[in-house]
Image 1 (cartoon, helix red, strand yellow):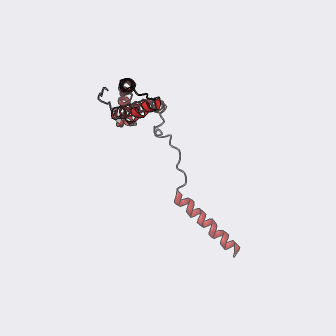
Image 2 (cartoon, helix red, strand yellow; image 1 turned 60 degrees about the horizontal axis):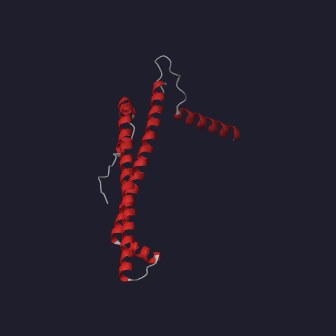
Image 3 (cartoon, helix red, strand yellow; image 1 turned 120 degrees about the vertical axis):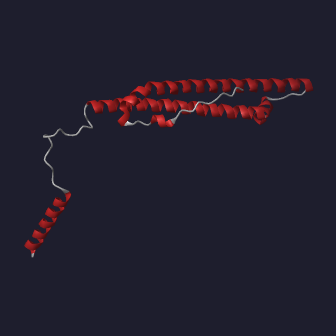
Length: 167
């Protein structure tokens, strides 16, 4: 079983800072490349762990059958499977394979998140280009609307007038 260093991706890189749009845009390909490499490495390690587990199980089955022939006993497939299930080395290999599978899935989710970040950056660029965040130019401001206190005062005045008319 080969144990290699697991690559962890910094999740803070998934956040987008709209005030640093040029830097974010320039870093996107680098981050995507790192995440793609992490997916590839995790997949390779997972596949190696799976091959090692399969090989270990085959070797143990062969050893059990040879021992049964040597002892002159018969052994069923169920008996072989039971011994494999209880084998400590197989248990550790299964745990390692499960760990590599989780790392692979995490790396794939990170790559998906970077794809979403790329789309968000594209949309942010479109909004900046369309001056979505711009303020009105001087001389073209809309006249101010009614203030909240004025609306309340007018409503109170209407209620009082209606009450006076009813009395």
